Each structure stands twice: as C-alpha cells, then as structure tokens.
Image (cartoon, rainbow, N blue to C red; front, top):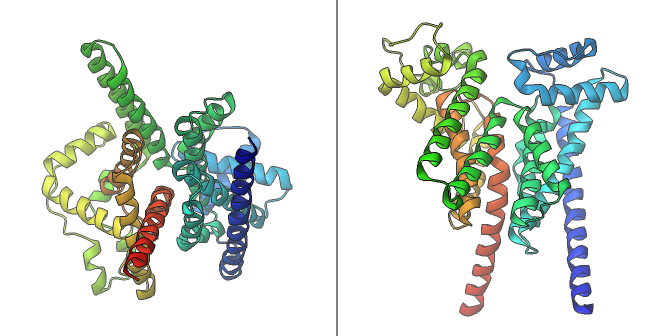
Amino acid sequence: MVVKGILAMGIIKKEASDLLILLVLFLIVSFFIFNHLGVKNVTDSARYLDYARNLEDGFYIEKHNFWYIGYVILIFIVQALTGSYNELNLILFQYLYSLFGLVFLYKTIKIFHGTTPAPLIGGVLFLVFIEISIWNSYILCESFYFNNIVLTFYFLAKTFIQKKFTVTNIALSVFFTILTTFSKPTGIVIILSIASTAYLYFWLNSKWHLRIKIITFFLVNFMIGYLINMMIETFQIIENYQFGEIIYNILSLPQKAEYNSLTHTVPELNLLPPQFPPLIRLIHFILFNFEFWCILFLKKIYFFLMHIRPYWSLKHNLYNIIILLPINILALWQIVITNNFVKFFILIYLVLHILIVGITTVDWDGRFFLPLIPIIIIFAAQRIYILNVSLKHYISLKF
C-alpha cells in the first residue's frame, strides 16, 4: 500500500511538472501568435456572428449554417455572458479552450500510452503543429472544433479503453460527440466512426442469425445515406466539379503558372438535373465521369495529405514537408501496430476524412487537415518515445 502511494505521488508530480512545462510553452506561443494576428474577422466569420446575433430573437434553423450550430451557440453564450459583441472576448475564450485542449490531449495520450514521456512529447507536438494555435485568433469554427475532437477522444478513451463506464463518462462522451458533430459538417465523421466500430463489435460478438446481421447492416447504411444526402443538399458539390478546381475557389485568384496544377481541364460531363437527390447526383457523376473524377479525387488527396500549396511560402511548405510529414508517417506506423478495435476506429476516422476531402474539395488555407492532427499527435508521440528508447539502447551497446 505504501509503495503504491509513493508511486502514485511520483506520477502526480510528473504530470504536474509536464503540464507546467506545457503551460509555459503554450503561453509563449500564444503570446507571439496573438501579438502577430490579434483578432481575425474573415469572410466566413460574418455568417457565424450574424446567426448568433439572430438567435437573440429565438432559436431557428438556417439550412446550411445549422451544421455549424455548436460554434454559433458558443458565440451566443460568450456574447450573453459578457454582455458585449466585442469579438476579442470570443478569441480569448478560444485561446483558453485551446489550453484545455492541450491538457486533455496530454491526458488522452496518457490513457493510450501510460506514464511514459509520450504525453509530454504529444504536448510539445501540439505546439509544433503551429496551425492549431494560429486558428485560435480566427472567428472560425476550427479552433472550437479541434478542441471538441480532443475532448471527445478523451472521454471515449476514458470510457472504453480504461473501461470506466460511469454515468459521468458516458454522458460526457455523448455530449462532446454531439457537440463535435454540430461544430462543422465533417463532424459527422466522429459518429460514423463510433457507429462503425460498434457495429463491427456487434457483428463479431452477437449471436444473432447472419440474416438479421445483414438486414441490420443495410438498414444502418440506408440511414447513413439519408443523413449524408440531407447534409450535402446545401453544398454545391456537382456545380464545383464543373470548374475543374483542385483547391476550392482557386480560379478567383490572379492566375499564375504555378497554379496550373490546381485545376484540371473539364471535359464534356454527363450530369443529372438538379431535381434528383444530391447523393444520387454525386454517385451518377462519379460513375459516368469516372476518369475526370478520379483525376480530381487523387490530386485533392495529394494536396490534402502533403499539406502544401503552390501559393504558400517556400518556408511554409518546407516546414510541412520536413517536420510534419515525418510526424504523420510515425503516427501511421504506430496506428498499424495498435489494438484491433482502436485501430479500426482510428482508420475509419482517417479514411472518412480523406474521402470527404477527395469527393468534395480541398480548402485553400489547409484548415480541413486540422481534424486529423489529434490522432497524429496521440500516436506519433508514442512512436517517437519508442524510437528514442531504441536509439539510446543502440548507442549504449555500441559505445
């Protein structure tokens, strides 16, 4: 009992020490970013701010912006609590919430990988992925969305990996899953990943007859298809295909030679009229314009995963290739050798995000990559720790 108490105290002291280091680093990084960027009100900011202000007259649904309602309600709450429309209040909250995201990312890594240095490594990686902190200064859903993802992963890990099936853990898992889902349209991926993993577990462990399992499979997929069709009604996916853009809205920029790789010549297309359901139109487009669609799809995935753009600075692109790309590879390495059900959940989560971008569009500023970063950090941190231990062992044997 005494030994366990001493070990527990040591673990608590180590965690406190790690979090203090991360707090200092976070404050330094945040100070420089905020000093440089301040409050960034950009093109998309207005629709969130207007929606939040309109909620003062009562709750209502804006068909497209409803998929961002989590962020809109956050703005509404911040304005109500402060009694002010000052945008600085929202940005300060986003920086504070980002600090919570850092702490809970540390705790999530600890659930996955124990009391090794991996959680501290993950916290440092959080700050190395400088874009995480940069989005805190923008009146956009990205910062809020990212931290919701982290908190969702934390409570899911606490509930299902640590097997702490308390009412609090389950309730918070459900709450943050729903909040993430309605923070941004791609938030639906978190529900689809959970549902897919749960269904796999059901398929392998249920004693139900195979026929019932198959019927259930088709019913679940029908409901998912219905939900996706409803979601993409407000997005101009087919219309955007007709521009041949790889990067969304790239044709609106002054054309330069280096932008040629960001568009593709549009052939004569076989299209269904707009009165057909959006999902049917999308499937038809893919089947009957397959070569053109494949070229767009593969190019979009390339720019998405490489996280580079011809119009970004050389320094920016080199940073992503030299620093971030190896971290991504290390994360994938660790994911491949992890627990089967966890691996399945993570791979579904990653693949769905990649498919969504490939099928729809790649954003010009790289923000669509943000939801992948928590997963990358969680698993890259452990792989970096393992490689460091192996390297130290190799050096000790050699010298």
